[in-house]
Image (cartoon, rainbow, N blue to C red):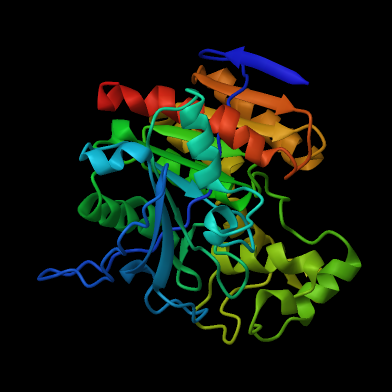
Length: 366
């Protein structure tokens, strides 16, 4: 197990994830139209509300996904006292929803993990927000484009504005964190490095989609199945499992409004790779983006981790760590014993929440 600490260069640990799915507010010059927050359901510890917010940035997306998004929000036990709190935005993974972290019976149940960490003194109180980012293709990779809609603006601007307007938050970047697992980890990294004016701390759990070859079919069978898809499905499960993430990647990073009914360009034609399409997709990979945003990353507290059995992602994040280390960007990185999913609840409770407790609490003066 790797557990190295790097300041300005070498890596190490850090682990906190929280997937957040949140609905976006419709911003209008005269008035904002959105569903008012539901009344919190009282509990002995924290409370949870689920609201629906109209996302103007997702209007007219070519996939036909609703711009009205459900958002689950955890309010800490002390929220009833009238104090204001830091906010952790947690992004969920591919084919998941906000209920994957807040629903009854969820394997990674954020309210339970947060309550337990607070009671144990491992975490200070914070608001935690997760938006529902499910789409017809299983997820829009928290990216921006005509086909999927502008998820980046939704998370970084509209969602944050909505939460700040409707809940008692500390409205400063120093009091906002962004985290996520898998597709959510990609979203946290992509959006976080581009918006240090919004989020001051990032925790990336087992991020997908890091390298140019991530989520690209690489066998004749997978390529044939990819090209055989001619119309959008009514539900993501109708897409062959082996190519679901590849279809979502093409829709996210190679949109084409003049290519109905899928509205994306395929990275393959008759089994042959299309260099121009692959180049567009590669431009959205963190390993290709990081050099542009080093200055932003220097302004943020950064941690990321991955299980040692999550082989490809571990290799990609190790390379990302190397790049940050070469630039002297302070961060922590850990490779722990586990696979892509089996340690995530534990990592959130024992790594992610304490990480944000330390870094975001400074803004609260606690």
